Amino acid sequence: MKTLPKIAIASIVLGFAVGAVSASPASENWENSCASCHGADGKAQTKQGKKLKVRDYTLAAVQAEMKDDEMLKAILDGYFENGKERMKGYKDEYSEQEAKDLVAFIRGLKP
Ligand code: HEC
Image (cartoon, rainbow, N blue to C red; front, side, top):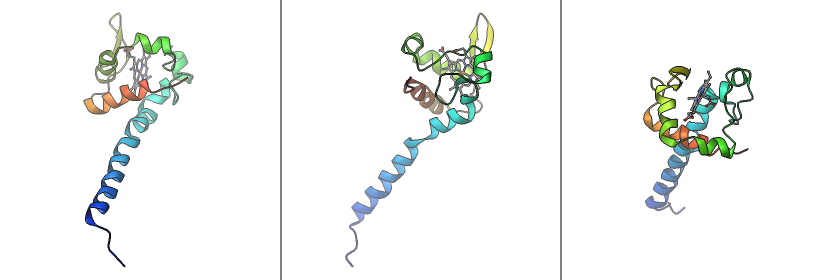
């Protein structure tokens, strides 16, 4: 049997690794830490989400209201309204990169 050229093996391994890295962490983090309030689908139709009056992040109007840098800050440092904390910050659990990935994940939510 002819052995595969090294380069082919390397690209298969690399391609797999890249796919594995970009495939799920943000969606998994969302599921684990955020979905209880925001809903797995971002519509916030959960008990907590309704109680806390969380907005539906799949709506274009809501997406337009939010700014990426404010979203990132909210995820890391918490979300405040009139000095009152409405959501705690997650900087002890998530790195800035993971928080950025969560922002991108939220931007990808569709109605
Ligand atoms: C205990 C309930 C709860 C959990 C858990 C929660 N949030 Fe929130 N979140 C809120 C509330 C309440 C608000 C403010 C109301 C709103 O935006 O609709 C909010 C607001 C936000 C905002 C809006 C910031 C802006 O600029 O308007 C983002 C982004 C966000 N959350 C992301 C996340 C992410 C990512 C997670 C998981 C790491 C998470 N939230 C977990 C309750 C929660």
